[in-house]
Length: 114
Image 1 (cartoon, rainbow, N blue to C red):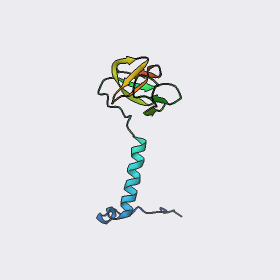
Image 2: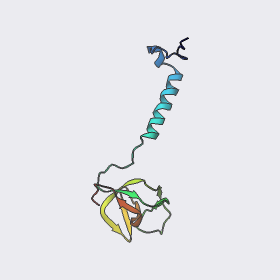
Image 3: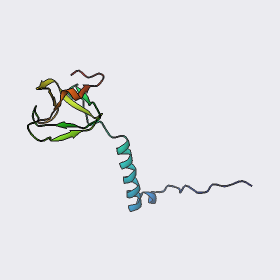
Image 4: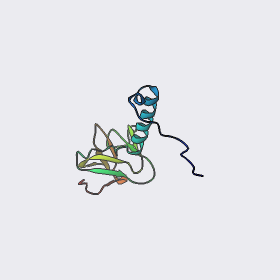
């Protein structure tokens, strides 16, 4: 006795791509793909891509000091664009307006010229 397939794949027709069910399925699929293949957040525009070292988050400040509250936080292992050779008071200048992070916690990625 041969066992037949337990379910049948519906034939795809134009009507299959209409309605809220399709929107829900397509949206969920696109969200999952975006989470799995999300970008690094770097553009490489300066040629200097840094990786956050250590296991703790790294605070980003609006100046090369801890005088003010952090404006952002980078997670361990995160890649970020930095300005080439711009270091003040132990802080490295990151790409963007007034973004500085402790240079000791950043390491250049392979191929970067920092």
